[in-house]
Image (cartoon, rainbow over all chains, first blue to last red; front, side, top):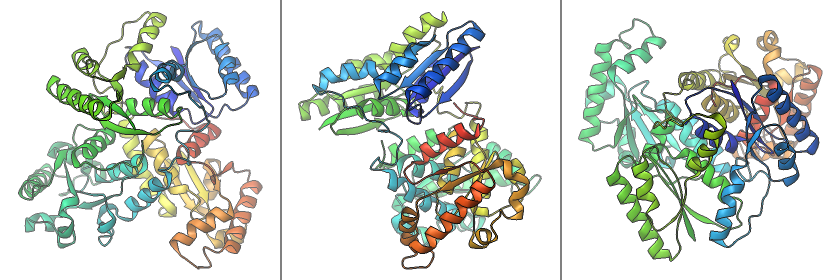
Length: 269
Length: 269
C-alpha cells in the first residue's frame, strides 16, 4: 500500500485536507501519516530519513503533501525519495500575478489562536455547552441560531461543530412529548421563533439510534419515533420554521446547509 | 476589496481550506463567500450570475476556488468573469501518472457520513460530553486519552475537537484544589495513569480567563492561579505525565501536538 505523508511546520491540517481530497479521487487505499510541527532543519532531516525508509521498505515512492514557510525545510523534504506536491506554491505563483502582490509567508497563519476569530470560537463552544439540550433557556438572546428537534436528531454534534469551526453560537432545544402533544413551541422559544432551525430524521434511523441508548424502550420503539417525527415536522411546517432532514447527512453537511439556508454570519474562514 | 468564492457540489470545506491557506499568504484582505451544494446546471448558472455581478460591481475579477465532480458544472463556473483555480484537477493529473490509475470522481467523497470514520466521530462526541469536566469517572476504560489540568486550562474544547475531527475518545478531568493539595492524582485516575495528558497554562492568561467567568474572585486571582499552575506542573513532572502549555496554542495546534506526542490512533483522515 502506498504511503501518503502530510507534513508541515504547523498543524498540517491544510496538507491533510488537500491531500485527502485529492487522493480520495483514486480507487485505492493509502497508508496515511501526518507529521506536524516540523520546524527545524534537524527535524526535517529526520523526517526525510523516515520517508526514505518507507520508500525502501515498500519499493514505492511515498506521496508527500507539504506546506512550509521556510524554504530550507521544503528543500530538505523535496530531496527525499518521494513524489512531493508543493500545492500552495503552485497556486500562490498564479495568484501573485493576478493580485500583483508578493506573498509574505508567515508561520502559523492558519489554524492558530492568532486568527481574529479564535476567541469567538471558544466563546461559542462554551455557549453551545451551556445551552445544550435545553439545559438553559434563559440565554437565547445571545444565540445566533437555536436548533430544535426530537431527542437524538443530531442537534448536539451540529451545535458543537457550528461553534468550533465557525464561531456560531448555536443553542439547541429538544422537543419533548409534552411540547409535541401541545402542538406548539414551548413558551421559552416563542420570542425567538425567527432564530429556530429544525432538524428532523427518518423514524427508522431515529429508532436505531435510540435503541443503542435504551434497548427495547418505548422511547426507541418505531411507533414512538414515527409519531414524534410526524408531530415535529407538522410543527415546523405550521410555524414556517426552516428545517432539514439529517438522516443522510454528516455534521459538516448539516452545518453547511444551515449556514447557507439561515444566512448565518460566519466568524471564521 | 477582492472577493474570493469557495464553491462546490458538496460542503465546499475543501475549497475553503485550500483557498484560505493560499490567500493567507498575501498581505491583503478578501471578502469571502462560500457557496456549498451547487448540484445542478441551473444552480451553477445562478452562481455564475452572482460572480459576474460581483465582478461588474467591483471592477475586479473575483478569485474562485472550486471542486466539482460533474464536469458540466465546472465548465459553467469557469465561463464566468472570474479567475478560477481548479486545484484538485491540477494535482490529480500528476498523481494519475504516478499511481498509473484513473481517478474515479464521486460526489460527497469527503466530509460525508459515508466515510468509514463517521460513526466513530459521533460516538466520540457523545463520549466527550458524557466524560467532560470529571462528570463521569467510571468510564475511563473506554478513553483513548484523559486530559487533566486545572479549571479553564483548555481541556473541554480540546476534548471536543479531538472527538469531532478525529474520532478520538477524550475524557477530561479538572484537578481541584483538594487534588492539588494532596499532591497526587485522585483515586479514579490511578488505574489510567498511562492515558493521562496534562494541559497547563500561564497564570496570567488563566487569571484573565477566570476573571471573565467570576470577576474579583479568589478563583480568578493571580495568586491562586500561580499556585494551582505550579502545583499541577509539579504533579505532572512527578508522575511523568506528558503535558503541554496551552497558553499560545489553538485547539487545532493543541490537538495536533497531543496526537503526535501521545501517539494516538486517528480514526479519520
